[in-house]
Amino acid sequence: MDGSSAEVAMVKRAKTVLTVAAISGSLRRASANAGLIRASAKMCEESIPGLQIDHVDISHLPLLNTDLENVDGKAFPAAVEDFRDRVRGADCFLFASPEYNYSISGPLKNALDWGSRPPNVWAERAGAIVSASGKSGGKRSAYHIRQVGVFLDIHFINKPEGFVSANHPQSKFDDHGNLVDPETGELLRKVLLSLQAFALRLLHGNSAANSGQGS
Image 1: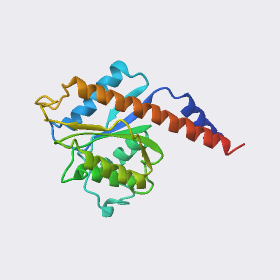
Image 2 (image 1 turned 45 degrees about the vertical axis):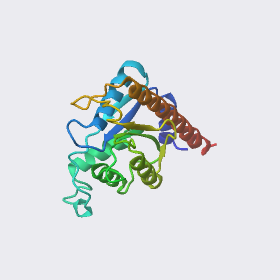
Image 3 (image 1 turned 120 degrees about the vertical axis):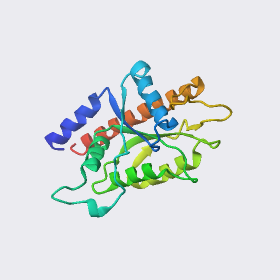
């Protein structure tokens, strides 16, 4: 292993604060899914040491069109490049998305696709999915995100499953999309702790594997 790879491995082993790129699949101002991300950020600041949320806005991304690539000497449009940089710089991912027509929301699928353009910026990191949706809690959407994640090489936690029936039997969010339900908050905490533990295992495992290559 060369010196630069060894240095990266050492940084990963020593890392104590993980950055979570958190993406809402809903662009609505009062989105409950964006509310889950805000609640996650507050929770990490107050009571989950070593985890910080970077809420990545995807509302400015153009629809995927490869004609927009390699224009005027730029690999990607500025908004796409900024998005890819933030994804690339994250240690793990949190997707909060509603279920649209039994599947992934259009904005989130567009973001996943932009990040997958060569070189894929999603690979080899942990991810978690939460969803505030109808009575199903967004299960079908989450399973489709996991399916896409197989190709993108995102490693999702299996438990707990963060499915939230946003308005059944009563609303768990206020009129601004802020989480107000303690039980859902506790589920969210468990998801975040599981993501943190799994992300650390992956980072340490990759570091150990890289170190072994030079032995």
